[in-house]
Amino acid sequence: MYLYNSLTHKKELFVPNHEDIVKMYTCGPTVYHFAHIGNLRSYIMEDVLEKSLRYLGYNVKRVMNITDVGHLASDADTGEDKMLKGAKREHKTVMEIAKFYTDAFFEDCKKLNIKTPDVVEPATNCIPEYIHMVQTLQDKGYAYFAGGNVYFDTSKLEKYYVFNDHNEEDLEVGVREGVEEDENKRNKNDFVLWFTKSKFEDQALKWDSPWGVGYPGWHIECSGISIKHLGEDMDIHCGGIDNAFPHHTNEIAQSEAYLGHKWCNYWFHVHHLNTSDGKMSKSKGDFLTVSLLEKKGYDPLVYRLFCLQSHYRRNLVFTWENLDNAAVTYQKLIAKIATLEDKGEVDKEAFAALKQRFETALNGDLNTSLAVTALYDVLKAKTNDATKLAAIKDFDTVLGLNLIEAAAKFRAEQPQEEYGSDPEIDALVAARAEAKKAKNWAEADRIRDELKAQGIEIIDTPQGAKWKKI
Ligand code: AMP
Ligand code: ZN
Image (cartoon, rainbow, N blue to C red; front, side):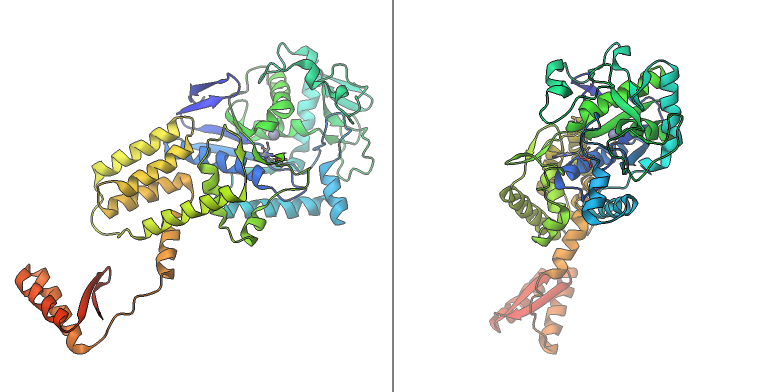
């Protein structure tokens, strides 16, 4: 499989570190509010990546954190504490907020057919691991204590900006409007590993530590949780592109300084879902959720299809019109699949040829829109319905569009034809079916013409021959 790697800025052949397992890590949600459909775009595409790897024969172990502590809007401790903000807004405790929005997140994932990762770990579960890491970083000379907090010293690194050649001035915290410089920092990109002095004196969750009672910085949780569950190396780290800097850059800095060697080989970044105002974001407050889509009558899987139709490395613009187009596409697809009859034997050769096209799409840097096209190729293929259904079922293990189930539901909801019932005519229709079975075409035609003369038409249905008055 070829995957674009943000670390090397090119598409590379994916080769896992270990033959028997792909180790994959995903930055999980910050649970102070509902996930918006932009967040969920990232989780849908990461889900497709995981399922593609499994489809292509890899064994995958995937780990995800839940950010329920310490995620400040800025490392300078000047932004708001997002969890605290949620708790105040809803007059609840931070832990109540975390539980509520974690559950809501997984509800949304279920509706979107996003598989729950093998390991899901709330950040608050791993405090001893972070303390151990921060202590080790300090012992190795990569961290310093200043003004009550522990900071990572970015000047100790040979290379800090691993993803882009950022213009340092652009990133200077101090020059951004409304963000104060943290005077404790020795270098402007240094970041907090552990807080004890924070402007959030009412911080609800605090733990004892060698530096005093406090709480972890945001970045350390992803390093701590991934190393705890995946060990000292990792194959693929995923997240939205907005996390590349500073979050992932800081994760790499502290993990590699702590481990003393390279940590993660491939970085998979999903680009943004935008509205006409730019990136959809929780902090802007004006965002769309899965429940809102449902309230407006959309099947959440229509949104999944909408995401699959575009490449994960392109910005995707959300408009209701675009979503309507996806809804029409989904309906047509389902209606077409609903006409297929599960009869006969699967043609193995035809099946393999169809599968080949699908695999080629996934292998080419997860080209999901081409994978959806491969689905249309199935419907157009010159093979029997059983083969088509087998291919659709197979592809859907990756696409996650519930194609077979939705088609069955579609069929069941179709208004039933009103067929005639009369013992004499029923007997003639049955006799014709027998004649056809015996390949006595002359007799079959004779009965058909006799019925036609009486104004009766025979209709072949999946449930056998029926009739109705013309
Ligand atoms: P958060 O809950 O804010 O920590 O974000 C959860 C995930 O959603 C992260 O991987 C973000 O990078 C990603 N994300 C945030 N906004 C968007 C967006 N508009 N489009 C796609 N992904 C996003
Ligand atoms: Zn993370």
